[in-house]
Image (cartoon, rainbow, N blue to C red; front, top):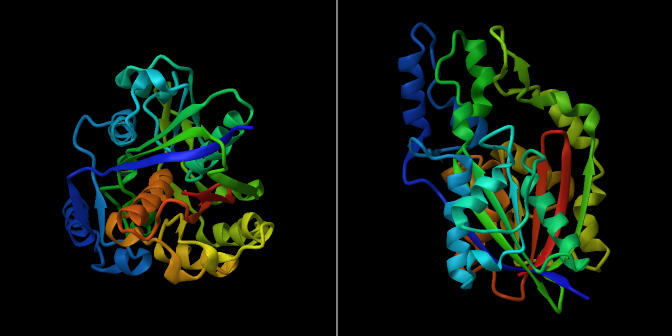
Length: 333
């Protein structure tokens, strides 16, 4: 039987970054007449800095940059890829799949498709890749993620209420990440389990709406924090711990725990609900902002580079996304 093994992970972060203090200054300059309270964004979210893509960079080019890194590190050439999955919130077109753009830039000739489930996109792509490798359909699968999330930042607000409503957009960051999964004799993707509470999808949404002059436009991201918290608390929290408890494990048996981070407050909430010890969590939200669907592979990469995760170690990827959905993937690196 084939098992999915994570052969490599890579991260591409743009050189350009912006501190929260710098963001507040720019926002104040572009929003005359509105008082922008200094320090509130960091106090509310924990974000001190975020990454900004250069002009012309797209979701596909960010994903390609990370994909090239992971392929170079693993010694794999594009013709060896059996499947490319683009997984992310951002996309470069309604049609075709952004995965086509990634494949064309890499020079790959394999099948491709996109997976989108908000910030859990990469996590669900791992679940799918695991099943496809186990079924013998493919042996080498590239999961590529590119996020141009700062395109949602509201640089001009008309009132204090506008500013508060826009705070989630001030946390996001641009990035690219890639995971390479290959068939192996022993499980690398040990287990996964997911849950959803879809009745609370309106709690966090960036809708596509008809434009007055025809066509469509993307409306600003809006969050009902109370309803979102209710939806998260109603999730099946056993889904987060199930991959461990079903194997007689607990959080202390893991070398690192990667938890999606939209803010420090949301990180603390999910850790509280799942009993995750904070001292085992790879924290990225402070220095890198909300990396959206890139968050979990970026944390895994950080833990490996820091030496906290060695080959053979167990790692959990714990996802939480608008929708509302959650899940855990247990990996043996």
